Length: 295
Image (cartoon, rainbow, N blue to C red; front, top):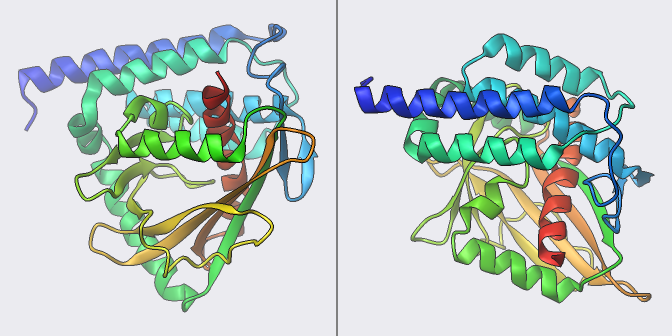
């Protein structure tokens, strides 16, 4: 039911989302300054085994900010345009002030709140739920895995895992959602599971699932013995069907710093583009989480 209060809240959220979009567009081709998300991160990201420039990860985030802003303001034309640019136009352009746009997007989510976000995305969630069930049925128990690696020249594997686990256990919602524009809700429930509403990989719709980090037995991704620290768990629909799993592993590097091997399993029938694109999602969210941990 659309009440006066809901209307005011949604309007405020849409205004903040529009601010995020303005920050995205207004950044223009300005050259990134030292200390920006592009330079001085001390991170190296590997996708498909190849080192990619951090500016490409930052550009991916910048494009997804525009898509998220359009979605929050119900601008579906903007969503589709942004999706096409994100998936097709991996342009080599300078990145402007991502932190300002990220902050505005965070304010939009906060103004709307979890309940309004769920209502706003209800149609997408229903459609993606059906699509996930179809992909699961077509996969016959097989899985496709998206893999990204990130190396930090500072910090330690144990230090990051401890920080990551604490953020989950204390339900630090801002830390979780702000790491990627495609995160809409990440909430730790009373049972310890995380409710996640996000756009995965190259998907066009937001999806909802629950991550259980205590369910190690059903994780479909084999652990790599070269990485002693493991954060792993299963992803399920609200009705309980297993739809995937995560296996993130970490080790210290001999010269200092640490390496992350980040893996997410999807039903094998999911389009290969989704698997490939989710590597950029992992690069963005974990790059931002590692950067926050190092501060």
